[in-house]
Length: 333
Image 1 (cartoon, helix red, strand yellow):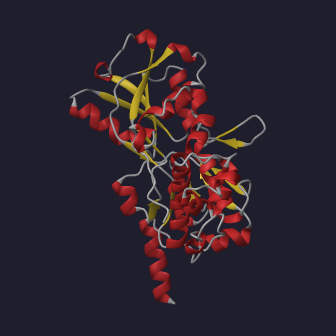
Image 2 (cartoon, one colour):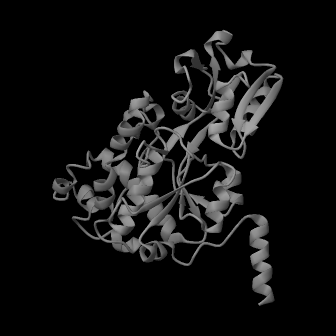
Image 3 (cartoon, one colour):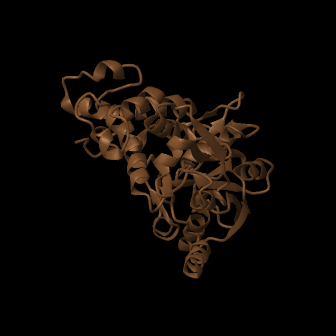
């Protein structure tokens, strides 16, 4: 008993909590997937006027719930700040973290979590008021810069300013809402975070048109969902649900034509949708697990158009590989 106690204390001290023996079984028993999301980023994870969560991060969790439970509505969304998101995952408060989180070495190797893949590629940038007449990040020496604590942005911006021998004053807050409010009220000269988030957050400003996102991208931010280490089955399910969204776009399988595409002449499409073979058995899921995920939210392109298209965000590097982008799925065979 003392050994077990010592091991438990050691895990808590390092921030690593062992995963449950079978997260998929636990989700099925509970009848709900617990998904950690942001406290409100339009297009990513944000509650609408009726309190319904929407966004690309949200739809990933709906797809995952549909694959496991057969119903994309069986998700409990838990809003988390950047500061507490990893603790919530490590402690078992949530099953999956789908909240704008960059895949880095330190997080992957030191927090007891696994990133299941890249949901979108991004990079850090800066937003300033047009009235400042600043057109480049290199003009920000001596500026006060707002950002969020517990994120990669603090180190990135510090590295950028140090590399270019510029003076920097960080103004940091725990909640994203606090950061954008501070910037909008003039407490800092610039706001730095990922470029996709800058575009989303600009919609919350009093006068969005008065603000400019500078052209520089100062980091690579491969963003994706994460799960606890120690449960390979759930890791595989979460990973292949993401791949299914990409593979469906590649094969032109949509939310609406999936019932017809089950009988496609393409065997790769039939395997993906459960019309041939039974790949679901390898995950311990129903043969139609991917079909259910796609019927719940559609393919990757449909999700992007629904949530990020209205914000005017182009696909860019988040296009499929055959269209010059970085995204593709390993084969379903």
